Image 1: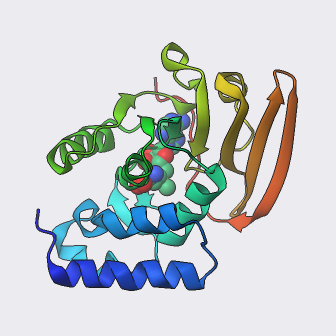
Image 2: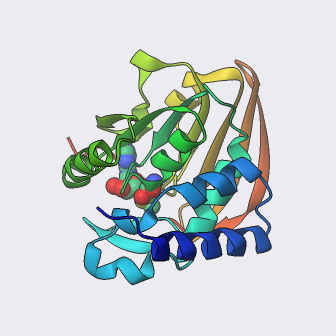
Amino acid sequence: MKDLPRHKGKRKQLTDLLASKGIKNKAVLAAINNVPRHLFLESSFEEHAYQDKAFPIGADQTISQPYTVAFQSELLKTQKGHKVLEIGTGSGYQASVLVELGCKVFSIERQKELFDKTSLLLKKLNYKPYLSYGDGYKGLPTYAPFDRIIVTAGAPFIPEALKQQLKVGGIMVIPQGEGDTQTMLEIIKHADDDFEIIEHGDFRFVPLLGDKN
Ligand code: SAM
């Protein structure tokens, strides 16, 4: 669990690369610069951690590409203290970036193996999002409403429960589409029945799957 000067150096290079690719939000770049991404991968894959690439994390899942994490985080326009719901905890990296941004993070994962592994890791790293094992399509009604919702798997449609659990004035960022690529959507909730949808280009995600149970 070491974060050495060489890791910090590579992380700074990655942050500069993301800025050169168009990420402007200084708080997002600072968060990426602070989270030790190499600790979210198996130690033998450490050298891949600061490349701008997605990477397998087990259970047929991936840690998202840093550019995608930065892009989604930027679209969320979070403020300190915001309650943010993430669907698809995976490695816990995106959740940790949101914690670094000062958000109160709630995250749902449907794969038990990843939920267990990530719960342990985040405790060790002293990141403290609320992690839930379950079906992200249902959101977390007990803790709703949320200022922001981020979905980190490709959703075939926009889940109704998530629209309901978003605060009026809130933003949901969700990659939507059933094929190989999804369109990144920024959804602004103006009123209970008034949602504005802004498209932000194509991305590639593993699919948001249905409930296992
Ligand atoms: N945010 C993650 C990170 O920082 O490592 C990457 C997420 S990975 C691209 C997508 C994750 O969504 C996988 O861990 C997958 O198991 C999870 N997932 C897929 N369908 C889900 C669902 N219905 N509810 C919750 N999680 C789901």
